Length: 253
Length: 253
DNA sequence: TTAAAAATAGAGCGAGCGTTCGCTTTTATT
DNA sequence: AATAAAAGCGAACGCTCGCTCTATTTTTAA
Image 1 (cartoon, rainbow over the protein chains, first blue to last red):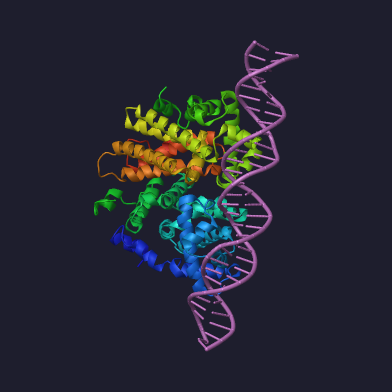
Image 2: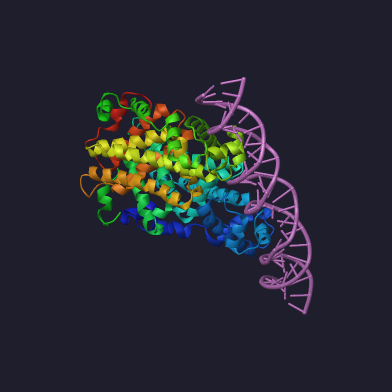
């Protein structure tokens, strides 16, 4: 069942849940992927043990660096929080910096996947929806990863810093291209560039201020609806339904 | 001449320049204010010397912490960049943390001032415009300050961390209140809360991604226009002019 | 049962951190 | 030109950092 077909039946429905169930970059599968992509730098040779440790390390890193910042988090702090000894830490990661690099790598891979899925759509409106929802849903599931990369880009080696900026550039350019295709003429109300910037800002708002959105799984669908609706309005897309009508069915939004 | 009167004559005009000329929180006056507010913690007793050093210290701090992050910036780095000795640094600031606290203090004062100016306006539409333009213009002039506070809130003592979050909360609540007053009924297209969130995201976008906006003084007026226009559209404000008309006069926007 | 793999505790390394303090230089006033 | 106060200096202190290493124990999987 296609995305739009579903939405016509029940707006603000279980799209996120569907995405979540298909999303392979989470849980053990995610850490398995990290293990595969960093085998050469990880001393632990068996996947099972590596996954267990990586899970602990990233969970603790996100918790500590959210509180203190990555630079202020010491490896002794991390050792305490993970329950691993110093030696244990260094058998799963090559050094402190490598933690940040892996986060960048994961976000990079996930974003590339979302762009790919969007490009499979023929209809630009569907492609835009796939893109916006993809970013919102993925950054909800991987909130600490996206959040970390935004705030800790400075902690990366300079090559990866550039890579991190490039991710953002690709995101906004992809949005801009699709929005550009949807604007009837060049005399649109708002230029595609500005609308794409706004869209990305709203996407980032969501994972940067996650404390505002306590039950993400409940509300992220509605948030995505509102973002898309706002994009349509910004580019004067007439074909869109008046938004009061969309939200008339359920009281809260 | 009032804000709207001017805009009717020439949209995207010299509003920023006017703001800039009236804005007292810049240059020596700003550092004088910092000196006054921190006299007890500053060993240098003569304003003239304090201003000279504070200027050096904050300029260098913003440059270094943008590159490395505040935590990674050492006071030896700062000493080298300012040309001051370690002792010289410590005669103008009480310790490293104090630098970040002062930034929070400055942004806090400036934001309070903007809210105050907005509240002086009777017409909610004018008040909203004053608020949005105020935030955009002030954060353009004080871009490094706003940028620093956003990224380095974690480096503050916990009391000031809360203070920093509160600034953001006040900003969005003030926007929300005014937008709420402008929405005709409760069945508005978008809830005021969401539109306020979007507005603040766009304001922050501007000073967080300042590398995108090379000539801020030239374009910030147009950016403000676009933000306000988008807010009006989001809340289905009919009285607003079609935006194509506004931008018809000048080619680029 | 057993050999390999994983993990531990923690002493220790050099480097660099934030901060201090006794001293010298500059300033402003006589 | 003299002088007292203010400003500025930079070596040194105690400490923590990222990281390594060893001896030892525990866990795993055949």
